[in-house]
Amino acid sequence: MATKTKTTKAKTTKPRSAKKATTKKATKKKPAKKRSQLDAAVQVLTRSKKPMSCKELVDAMAKRKLWSSPNGKTPHATLYAAILREINTKGKDARFKKVDRGQFALAGKK
Image 1 (tube, rainbow, N blue to C red):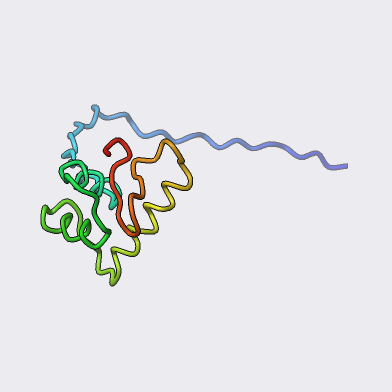
Image 2 (image 1 turned 180 degrees about the vertical axis):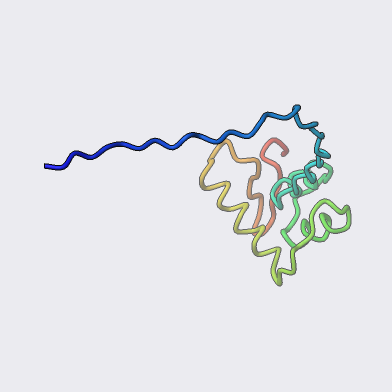
């Protein structure tokens, strides 16, 4: 039987040079987080004295530059569905309440 012999290679190491100068990378500021449609609706309703429809809310949000639709054709329908979803899922803890057909107000306001 033949025996295997191990051959070891000498490690080649590079001479260590002086520490590399570390440069600080320019810290980029994170862009401001976009406000959600529901958060903008809450802001509009806090300033409003009366319940509003979703079309009125979307128009007021655009006018005050709180939120704008990203090329959507029916942002009022999206807002309506989102408000109803919040009312159904959160129940008493929801920020909105349905006052009349298509009219919403803040849950804390009367």
